[in-house]
Length: 97
Image (cartoon, rainbow, N blue to C red; front, side, top):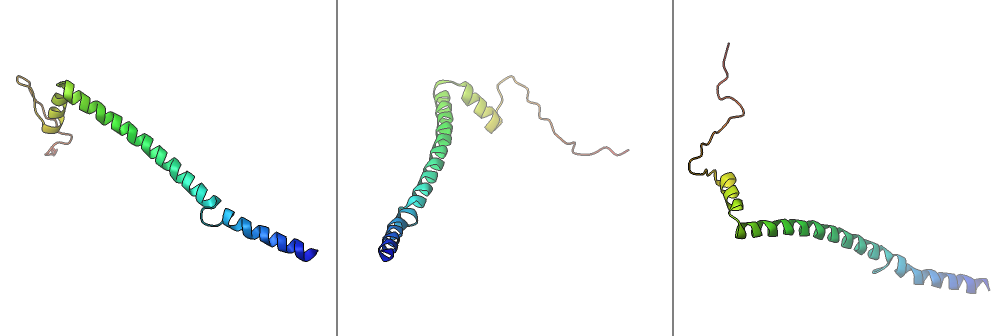
């Protein structure tokens, strides 16, 4: 009777091994769920960036304010009749006493 019990116990353990440790087992399922959650978070961040880009494209297509702002900041352009003052953070020559 003990041999039958031990044999059945070993068979149960052999059947459980692939479920817990084998290919496609619970460990792989946990890893796939974690990868899925990471991908979902990355997709949410990408959706936010995409919505900002879409809004900027819409502004560029419909209004001149965005084009003017871009020209001022990126190209250093000024309007006609404006005076441009450039300030320096540090003086070029320090005064000696």
